[in-house]
Image 1 (cartoon, helix red, strand yellow):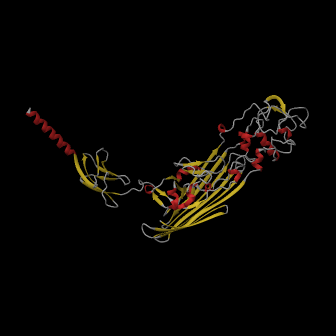
Image 2 (tube, rainbow, N blue to C red):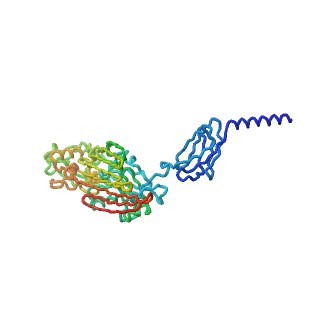
Image 3 (cartoon, helix red, strand yellow):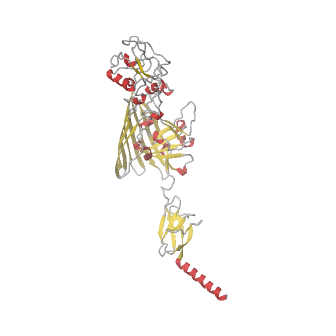
Length: 531
């Protein structure tokens, strides 16, 4: 029994000695490179293994490195990872540097002041310029939809129309709930020029917000500032939140040229449009008019004055005088034709829309200067005939280090927007869609209405009055688009000039003059800020 115990003891001793021969202990201390203070909780790991430890309160550690271990890896949140070769070394004193990329990203706050996100006492969320230009949307505000928590973007279904921007819900039942737009520290107008009738659902055209004039290719980032604490420096105008936009700048000792191009097409979604019944034609009741003065013979006449489709049931064997029998230039003038539903309903009135967007940006700089110069051309063809919007967007910014402490910079942005045939909205005669969905006869063929207008470019419609001198209510929709269309233009100019003097490493004085002019309405803001 004693021999067995002695043999067991010797065997364990050999195994322990062999294990000790296969590993060796290393020690060390980890500190902050900037402050030289110890860093507790730093992960120290033998690369390629699961062997590791963490530093103590004083930043020190002890670790047994197994045989074959060649490298130690030091990891700590918000610091750069460091690797050290082990070799024959047994002591490791490592200083870790902070990693700006791992810190919470920089947020541009009120007056263009940059802060780390973890320093903010309020909510802010950033969207990069790259995210805004992927879909090549002509309105940069629409591109924010779905990208920011608490931001409600109510997009429009009209060409170049207004967009509603609400942050964290509505704060007023009768007042303005729109967020304030600030570009490079410049509060800019996001108002529209729509008339009172249009804003309450009556007639008019939607000319869009001024924010639609922003050049998406010139935007570096968008920060959405939420709440009173985030927007207090802009006063009551920012009570609904701020959309803080930072434009692109040049880089020193570099020259970059970027070209972007995009084309998108759009069509009406017929599954969401009104579905027309094909059993009954024009009229408010089951009856026709007499054939007085419409040609030889006696035949029923469609009730042109009834702008609805509750009339007689369609019958291909029934010959009827329709709207074309009154048009002297129509091949069917004074003739009857079968009482059937139209082959081409109002969905054929809509065309394929095209949105083309091209831009070129040249940026760079020297030892003390930077610049950024860009031009963007945006051509929009709408889904209605004769509807277009053309935009020319120019932007330029530059900076110059006059001395080691004084830096001056300036920026200018100009957008020219020209619209033709913007969609009519609400209850009005220049809104063909309102006519199609509410007051229409299913026996009216849209292709025939197109031919009737282009024959002599007159308002030949199906809704004749009793004396046959013109329409009662509904104009020919092609006449509306080619003769009764809206025609608008807008010039939007904004920019700034800034001088920043560095008083100390932690204090600077900044003087800024800004301007924003839209269609002759001007606002000038002068600011002197200590940051």
